[in-house]
Image 1 (cartoon, helix red, strand yellow):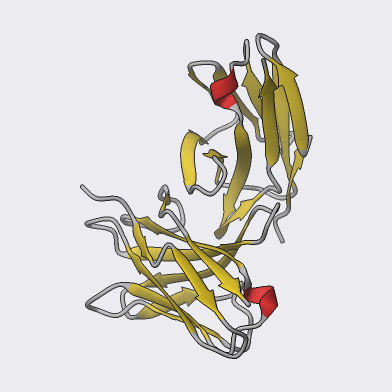
Image 2 (cartoon, rainbow over the protein chains, first blue to last red):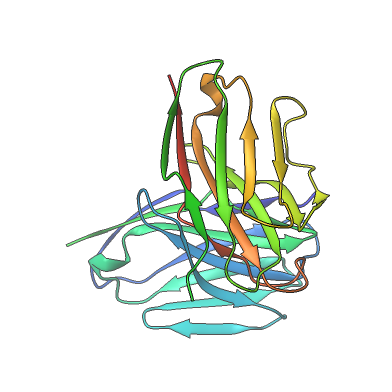
Length: 108
Length: 115
């Protein structure tokens, strides 16, 4: 059974700082997703990573995938308040399995 | 092109009542997925349906829960005799073609509160 673990679960950052969220998954996965969820809202798709070494960037967010290590990272550069949200990774193998989420709070 | 639509957005039921949650997939999408999100947790897969077929219901509780996706109309997640532990946000997602590897698009969710 595919298991997905994220860390940290909670993260408070100052504006302007950099940080990385880690996502480990336990078995082979077809693809890896990153989603953002604002309180009381649905999930917004951020990135889909398809192959080993894949790197995608959008604004201050960059996601990467290492299929050999079964690890994906979401790197935040020069954080701004608008990035405060909960971020989920999800791995696909027969079905989509979500991590527990990382609640990110950006402090002015 | 409208996104995935769910209704109601908020639903309050008393213990023992029935809850019906509806999901209309994006236009052209024939695959529907239901997920449950408990407070402070990630989403948990419940069921995967195509029109008139249940493909994978491995995440559905064995009792009280059922899902359908008829030839016409929205997909329905039905919870009979609700209990407090059923309080959660229920999200529906849809995909276009080959469900297993196609990107899923999520609806806004239905937040169920059981009193």
